[in-house]
Image 1 (spheres, helix red, strand yellow):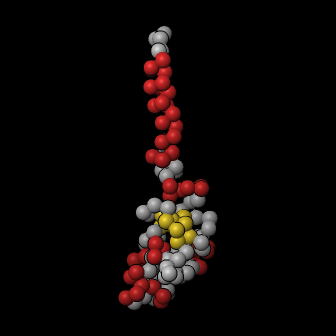
Image 2: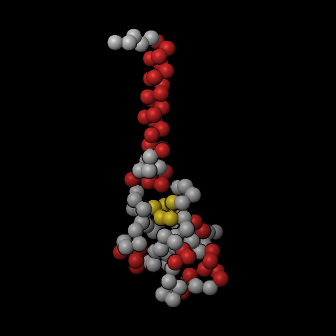
Image 3: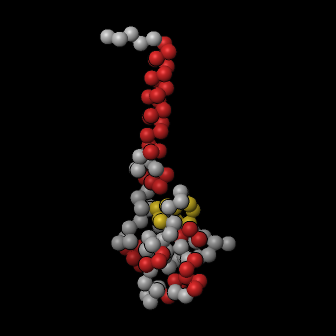
Length: 115
């Protein structure tokens, strides 16, 4: 058995500690998008369907959801809504869908321009 001296003990101990701290940050489930254990909102969720949520604002049915139609509709997306709080560049929390995260480029009929 190899003898571990004090220097190696602290060197390997620091590496082990750093890997425990940093591993959730680099794993998908530990990323900031899933902070607090909130899963991404599914378009098939009943509330999401009722409000016309789509994770891609460019694919919203503008005949059904006329609020999104027209030139002003191009700028309507979750990241420009007053109910949205960003987590990272792709995900955020929404005050409407409190149990899930939403895509920053998503859209729903509750969209309201940020003040």
